[in-house]
Image (cartoon, rainbow, N blue to C red; front, side):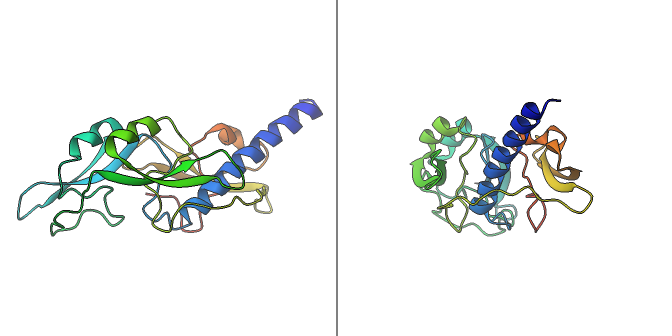
Length: 196
């Protein structure tokens, strides 16, 4: 591979790392109730059952509008899962998201939209839906390519599985074994491990 091609490939890796670094800043290493946009959202659907008050379900944004008048649904589902006691009136048919602006000095704008408007964001892969509890990132940080002494880096590889959305793997820093082109991968893995 020529020097120019290697340089171009490394610049793509650094660009991917900048996006991932921004992702980590936006979510925080704990991943508190915010996730990169995959076109789906997990909710607690109220069942009207005293013994099983909620059903946890992951649905497409298009299906969410059907829950706008379900006032006892919890949208999004709490980080620890659905509670065992109903919280009445928690759903107002709106959701707060971090909309990616593409501007380095102001990478996200926090907006609250109704569920019907969420469909318009289904292909905005840089958005965070729902917004993390600690808010949207306000600035980006300078990306750095780091690894251990063996030239390796641990990443969260996106799997497309709802139950196990990420798998923790270690790859070469040099080219990232192609994972620099995987927009949903988290590079490097957060300190607390991959989001669940």
